[in-house]
Image 1: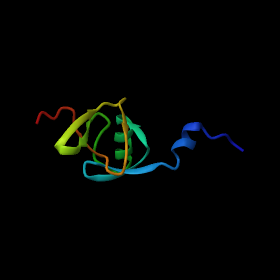
Image 2 (image 1 turned 135 degrees about the horizontal axis):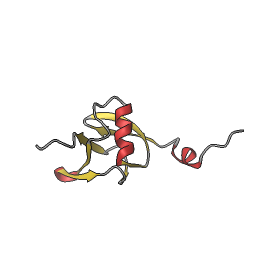
Image 3 (image 1 turned 60 degrees about the horizontal axis):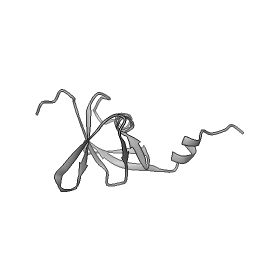
Length: 89
């Protein structure tokens, strides 16, 4: 029997559906880095790139920037927006 890496064992049964740019994205949880969130979104067909700026939508219309190495706790209500880093709006 082949050994399974510990990380795979711990995350295999923790798939969570989050929202990125109003689209559903399935991702291993309960925590993920900003880079992992963007990669999962790309894999799910969301039209973003890894270089995009990711922000988490918080209650009361607040947002928080999520860097590529920042860890975020995820749940089914987690919502994110990814925009091109050169967006000056």
